[in-house]
Amino acid sequence: MRALMPAFDCIQEYEQARSERLWDGMSLWATNRDPGAVYVLGYAAEIAVKCAYFRFSGFTIVQPIGHAELNTAQARAHVLHVTAPREGFHSIRFWGDLLIEHRRAAARPLPAATEASLKVAVDAVYDRWWIEMRYKRAYSSRTDLEQLAAAVDWIDNHYVALYT
Image: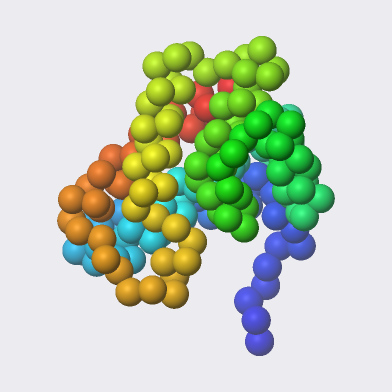
């Protein structure tokens, strides 16, 4: 029997998953299980940036996020000239660029220092994590993990500022 799952995705579910993945990733890192830590920490960062985009877009925490909402985000990305590929809607670069450009279009850009730090953090995660890692053995070094953990920590500590 399959585990019970919520009827739909929403920010509330994403945020709970983000918190759990962050805890899981840090636990794996603390026990020197670097390959698993890279994958789980990267996932936590992707969820955070995606949630920040939907929160900034005005979604309530229980509003369903399904194919229609993801396709609307993709259409908005096209209009805003976001060129990062969406990679099955798991690209942290896609969500980061979309969040930045959507905020600019809404005349509520991030402060310059925050935007620059977000880009650095997103790039650090993007260069070390991708969704397909779940099917591959790990090639990450300890340095990669430390840089990824620092980026994920920045995103986690600035999460609320990304959407407010």
